[in-house]
Every structure is written in C-alpha cells, then in structure tokens.
Length: 197
Image 1 (cartoon, rainbow, N blue to C red):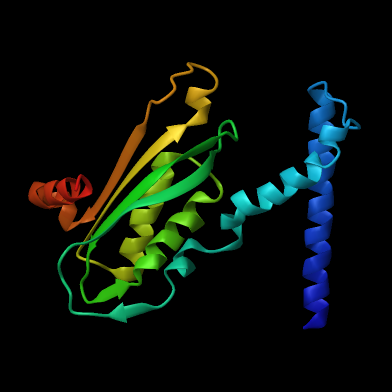
Image 2 (image 1 turned 120 degrees about the vertical axis):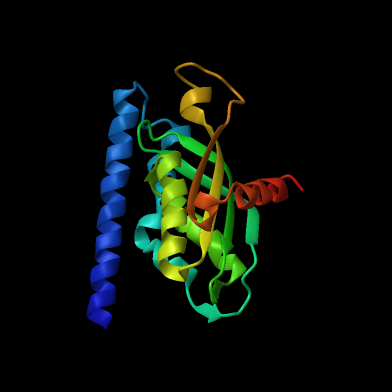
C-alpha cells in the first residue's frame, strides 16, 4: 500500500510541476516578466486553484449520490438554489449560477446533501451548461430510477460578459426533464412555481 501511495504522490508532484511550468510559459508569452515579485508564486497558486476547480475529474459523479435509502415517499422532492462554479470548455472562462433539482421518488431517495455533491462533481470540470443540466438529470434517473426528474440550471458566463459581446448580467437558463415530467405540463408548472417561492 505504501508503494501505491508513493506512486500517487509522485504523479501529483510531477503534474503540479508540469502545470506550473506551463503557466510560467503562458505568462512569458503574454509579455509578463515572470521574475517580478507579484508573479513569483503565481504558477503555484494557479496550479492549486486548478486542483480545486477541476476536482470533478477525480470522482465519478454517480458516486456523489452515495448511499440511497428505501422510502415510500412518492411526492415531489426539490432542492433549489444549489450554487455552482464551473469553467467553460470553449474559453476556460468561469461561469456560475444555481442549479435546481426536482424528482419524484419511486421507492428510493438520496440524502439531500448528495444532490449538492452531484452538482459539484459535474460542474468542477471543463463544461458547457447544457451538458451539466443533462448529466445531472441522467445520473439521477439512472441511479434513483425515479418516476420523474426535472433540472433547471441558471448561469452567468464570463466568456459572454467579460469578452466578446460583453453583455454583463445576461443569464442562460437550461432545463432537462425525464419521466413523468415529460408528459405532464402540470408537474412542470408545479416545479417551476415552487422555484419562485
């Protein structure tokens, strides 16, 4: 076991050194002096930040749901306003917002905090908002086998606000529906109305 631990630590160290090297090279290429005081520790700081914001690669999002529980509750369960931060895969620029998850159990439920962990696991990687929305819905549908799932994700994208068209404050809203939500406008309306409360 010590051999595996040493191997993993060596790989993490090697990866950190490589990322730091490349960050330093990028700083040079944009015209910065990597020897000036304010930038001396920047490659290491950026590397530590990447380890945090791309931590989703270290976990299978399905595992984020953890243990599920048998429960006869068959009414709508909603966890709303789950704040997330992600990185746009097109520009590696941040985007962030809130995810809202609703599902109708069919005998199996997840711990409420596990839904927030699922959002974290899906968003802490290079992403697009549309994929985040679908992945959350698909994973819940696959793991819990509920009667229905609805996910709404709101996002503000810095690739739109800080560059390009520069439309600060514009938000993107995406949704995904599975199961009973697909065929019932009443269920979709109930979910959306509860998000406003």
